Length: 168
Image (cartoon, rainbow, N blue to C red):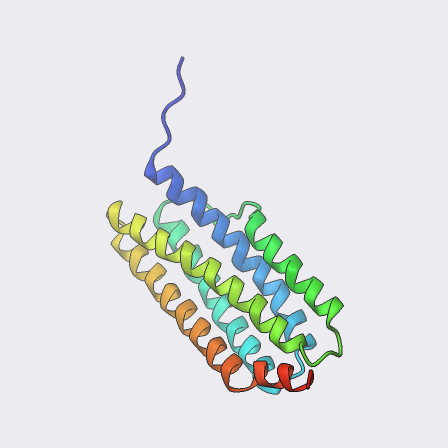
């Protein structure tokens, strides 16, 4: 008997499990990044995103329910790697003026990963006729884009400047 070919539905579900795991992992990393950050503005940005991430997890759980699947993650090597890099930055640059720039860069790597995943999931949900799911995924996609923009502004306005002045 031959195996049934995998479908876009299967890919959507697998990718949903991937980003669910990623969001849960991010929720464990953000408090550590907040604690490590030296800038109050960066700490506030991380705290704000932690609250948003909790809402994103809840939206993902609603999407799982819409496709009659349990909300369950699967190991995401990509997010594990990005978070491992941020842990390395925290360790190697602790007490350094460049720490916040490194933390901010790590946070943006996470955002860019999430933006790519949510954009793909939204497109697939639309293709599959899952319009309510697409709407929820779009809400998260817009939050991720806004967070990325806010981090860029913070980097340009203060964090990168503080890191570079210390070298002078």
